[in-house]
Image (cartoon, rainbow, N blue to C red; front, side, top):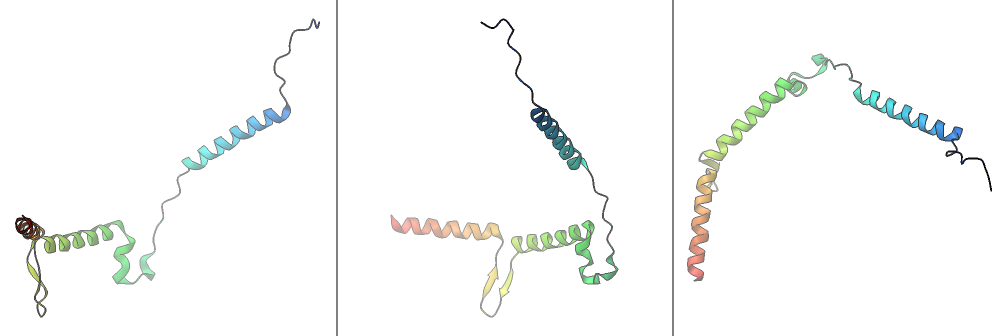
Length: 111
C-alpha cells in the first residue's frame, strides 16, 4: 500500500501555455473590438454636383424627405395616372372603401 498522499492533478506546460494563449487571444479580441477608427472625411470635388447629396447625411435626409412627401401626396390625393386610358389615382382610404363595398356586394349575391 502506498503511504504517500495522492498528488493533485498533474499540470503540464502545454496546458498552461494553452490557457495563457487563450487569455491573450481573448484580450486581443476585446481590444480589437473596442478600437474606434478615425472619422472619414470626404473629398467631394470629384463627385458630380447632381450626385453630391448621396455623400452626406444631410443630403440623404433631404432626399428622403422629398420622396416621402411625394409618396404621401400620391397616397392621399386624386389624380390622373394615364388620362388617355382613363386610369386615375385614388386616395388609399377611398380605394379601401370601394373595395369593401364590392366585396360586400359579392357576398350579398352569393347568398
